[in-house]
Figure 1 (cartoon, one colour):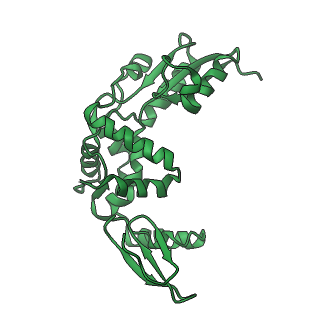
Figure 2 (cartoon, helix red, strand yellow):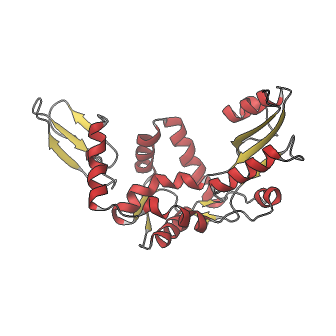
Figure 3 (cartoon, helix red, strand yellow):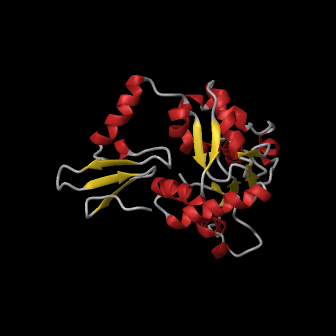
Length: 255
């Protein structure tokens, strides 16, 4: 069986005003697909609402998300809308050569996203603004890419004054309005609800099974510090909101 049509989930950051080499990996892949001789459609997706699952542990813990740029305005798109558009463009005629920018139907600040998540869970949730360097360390611990972490922080900062644009492509392709962030939060309320005692215990045990021994002592609050002795050599380890650091002389050093 030979495929004749490709629907590629690209990124809204891709611009036709610059060369593909300046559009990162998404632009390079778009160019390869366009040169393949196959029919194609590009879905240039904005921020995905599922990325806010990165706050789930903080919401579960005490309902407080400690992050940076709460006033950043985002038009996050529900993953189901991306899937619906992909199915239409893959199975229907009339979309060959199209480049659809997909977003949610409205701009919602990051702080408001947290409030809506709490509303969906049935438990108040709030935003606590923290310094950029604190968020950078936490984000870096999640993704392990310093350049990406810096770029994301720069982008969120820019969205404070210049919120993400809103497109109507989801409705134009599917005939249905794009789902709101409130709807996304309701669909994912179970991901943010507090853990039961049994679930919390399993959350602590599972990293040991996977030999991720640092994870069970990771602290969610950036201003929380834990200093514990090391049985092996009498030294100490310090855990500070993002991950452990070990000191050769056995004592924590001031930061």
